[in-house]
Length: 86
Image 1 (cartoon, one colour):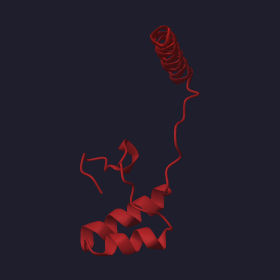
Image 2: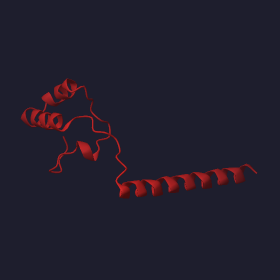
Image 3: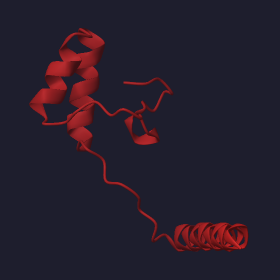
Image 4: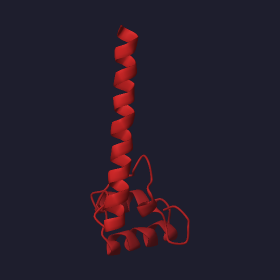
């Protein structure tokens, strides 16, 4: 009996996951899916990259200056346009 309930719960979980993905695809197609806001403004990110390129030790100081922390999982927004990572 318990196995049947577990199977139903797993099936329901799969349905929820499927509906969520479908909804995200529809929202992305309509332009409504924004995602997480970037931690730094464009000019702040540019300044931080300049600091990083000049002396790598100053990158942590730059992050502290902008009240931002290093992300554990870098996203596409934190990568450079040339494909490198900050």
